[in-house]
Image 1 (tube, one colour):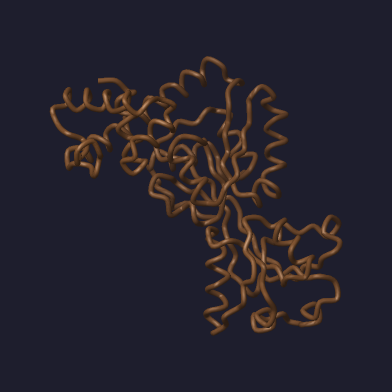
Image 2 (cartoon, rainbow, N blue to C red):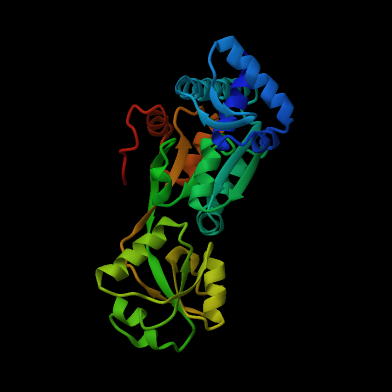
Length: 314
């Protein structure tokens, strides 16, 4: 039995039984995967997948157990490799962070700059995507950490630790009528077309719920994955923007005005996501603490190893 055979079986299951997609993801050939899979099944004495001719159409009951164990073995093998790298080259290696545009643009820069000063030889990669995409990257081992809002806490394969809370603002052009409404109400905002985040973001649901609780159905005319796009279209006159307050800078966004909306919507919490049971390099813990000082190495380690689950809150 080889780890590569287990990796093939897990990737096929992850790719919804599409052997071609699994082969492409693992940079190998479809016939090669099929041959190794048959070899693994013969050694184990069971069939992992249900077949219809040459097609895989399901996972057998023993196959489900095999895949769970294989995933754990592959995770342990990856942890062994990271542990060896950690002690062999303490200040060498890579750190991959998957995050949303808003976090990458407005929340992470200070921590990134401080980390690079401390670890100049560590390669730092930042992958951007929506919360679902970045959670999957960490679950698959393609990223070490992910940073986003509440949504990542819903992923069963990750632990999600709170970093900080943030609120929203309403963004409008200068001289917009909403600037004269005091106090600002959801009823007043709902009179105008709205530009806000895409449905893939959990905080969008919180905005929708706030309007729905008041019996309002706002007209959302455009959605975007990042705050900069929202501001661009507000400036073009398409509507009023609802976005993270951290993404508005009066000096940089001088052609727009921001109105505090903390009283209109509940606050959101940015969270750090880590794969359950993952081994993190020592410099990864340093990055976490630079970004979220409340998350000590001891707390993160205990959470990742599920001794405390993810019950810790701000």
